Image 1 (spheres, helix red, strand yellow):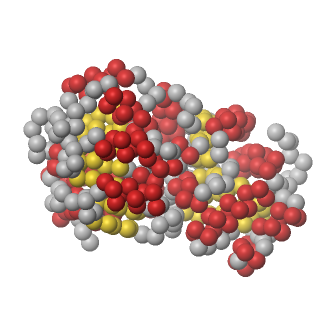
Image 2: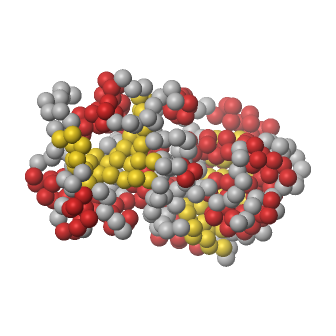
Image 3: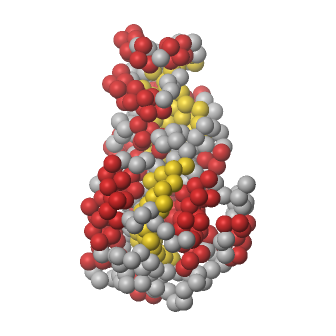
Length: 409
């Protein structure tokens, strides 16, 4: 089994890893770190929660430590503010014993403090595409010393419509550079981008794509659409759900559900793109510390949200894209812990469920709760032959029971 010292990392980095009790690299780290240290381009595909961040930050910090004076020599592009901020914290944690400067720039906050940081000089810059373009247009950046660029969560940048901005940024960088692309999935558009901007990249593919980690227990509750709120209210009051992340499809729905769940006596906040950065940071910090035990979010939290101890991920709305389901439920069962993924599914979401199950290559077990049973049409459609015999046996074979006559929201 490979160890971090065997990968050839600097002693300062090994000391920082000891501080956070990282002893054995994950498979993606074992494969990626030597490639990055060799200066080669890298195209890496690995499922969420496999340690991709350390796979590129550690070797980049290793190389940056050899140069003198703060000059922008490495750039990491991130799709969301939350992921960018998290990457910034990881860079500080891993590089705590190195004399390096790093900073994070993203939208939703003032330009002034970011400009001050850039003027003082940085070795490593972590940025979202839109805010980076703002700084580029204002002449706040120089890329003449840049030697490496990382595209993190590249498929998410594609989903969010950032690919044209990413191409504009890459075209402004030195042609002679190392390019690292990390992605949980590899759609055709990302493969074309890699072909256009990389030079003979080493390709690593760690683990099956679009597959949740094995320690996530999945279940699908059948329910009518108008009963979802009451069912979730019941599960939160009666179940052993300690640290819960709930996903909705829209921002307004997240706000509405957060208000409704406040009636459970739990500490609830909403997280989505319309929130100010101050409120988003406060909600995430509260969720990390346990002050907030139920966070209701849109897919802004599906990627890059690294919060330890999330006991349950609940899909209040089944995602329309199978990969989004994988990333959502990957927020639990981090670092090989156990976790539970619950989806509340109505008849209108049947096609999404079947697409997810085709991607998984397995059927998600069905359950119903007495007092919240859907109509016979919903049950029949969810137990058609397309769903497999195992799903038909699971439906109705395991039921949770709740008293009838509960108050409607």
